[in-house]
Image 1 (cartoon, rainbow, N blue to C red):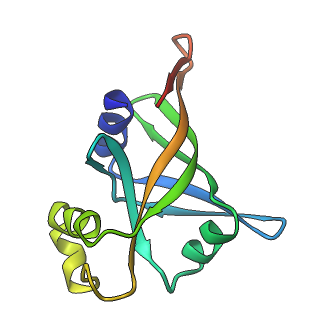
Image 2: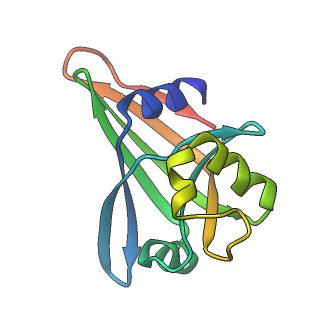
Length: 130
């Protein structure tokens, strides 16, 4: 898990893919928090991505950096604790202008049953399960 976290943090931007009906939806994300032994991301409950995750929690993340790319297949699970939401906001102070831990909109998800594959054109893929 540590290698996945490091890759996503260093890449700074990753792309989160969800499904809306039968249509894939992909958008850039930048939040990735290691909290209580799990990896977390954050969004707003009013955003379409949150509604897509509610309907189908299976998702993929993808990022590219220095000639390598990572794909992470997972199930996203909401952590409804205010402490988890506050930990994310503490890690990303720029979010605090738009979100509060108890605003009813901030939502954090952790990655469950994750399988990450780090690939490049010069080395064999590395698979990491967590």
